Length: 246
Length: 266
Image 1 (cartoon, rainbow over the protein chains, first blue to last red):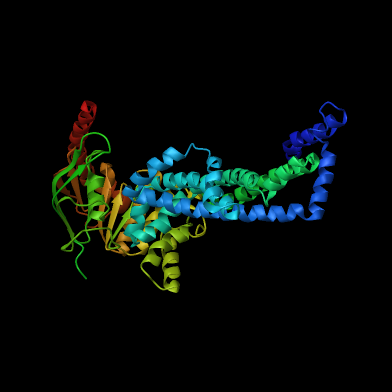
Image 2 (image 1 turned 180 degrees about the vertical axis):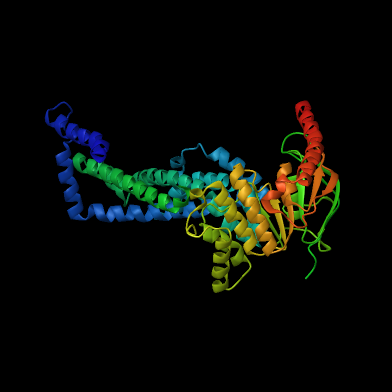
């Protein structure tokens, strides 16, 4: 019942999407009926285009995101740990935070060429700052008595970093990484628009330019579905990692 | 093994807030704690009694004066000085058992020994059946029992307690007092116990050191004398009531002074 209620708006949207172009309320040339999009999706899947481009996208996305998360957590925690590093890096982070990172895609192309490296680098840069800030805030917010408890038990300062500061900061880090996940999709698709060659973003722009609008919509829906699924899976992992919070 | 007597020699401490003027928190505190003695540090809030404990724990640097344990100068935290905080300071991502195991792992005990010791202390503080619970699933009293077990499990010669029962309700606090005294009877330790609760101090301690309002100094030291303890019944004795009355007056003066300080602060 509650599941039905939750998905009812989507169902209604699907119905309107099917009916409006068929009744010519919307021009079917701009918005093909959903059933036609579904058929085009099926054809894309059978031809292998969807799978090969999808895999390429997922590869670049995971590489850029993983890099951003690892570097971001390290940098954020170290900034909270060493004051000089904080003083050096924090003004840069603050200045660059509001900048739309997609503006750097052409720069990446200039430096790394028209290939996966540029896409991965763009995603990495897009993910980096939210992770840095969440790790920094999480590490700064650690209760000092937790650190003291570990030190009094005989922990070294390095052990405190791994055994107290990181786990304490985990809730914030995981929330920041969720933002990074959403940003990584944006950077992925926009870098594929610009760089082309491969990927779901490339597929969408290629099909759109060729006038295959039903297939283009199929590509858009695929990206939306993959993004939604990734977020759901991430949330489930995050909940189990934070089960101790109740 | 070196002794566990503690000496504070002319220890001063200045608290420097990120904004605002530095505040002299402790002013030339000298105090000796005897081996295996239960000493209560009693004083109004803000008198620096917790700071004194943190300095002894090695968590804050001693800038002026000297603190030594068994003759050796304190330069940092160490497993010879276990500490229990008011707000438990349990690792929330670890279960009861994992919290207690943490210190034992740091002491590099072999695994079977660690497991045995952890279970022993879980039993000691009556937490059987809660080994795999997370702190968020426990009541305040249970959390503090875990914290005490975690600290006692590594068998520190000195036990530092920073208002450990301050966050508990009166009934739980009473039970915890009994448990603490029972534990110390079985495993004698030097205890430094910070509190602002006069009855608690008189009930638990061998000696009570009264601290003055800020800047904290030792105002006076009162012998309680726990020979032939009567247990909970002691609170009805004339002697207990007199000591509480006496200390209450002594602390009250300082508390009023502390309050007037607060109201004249910018």
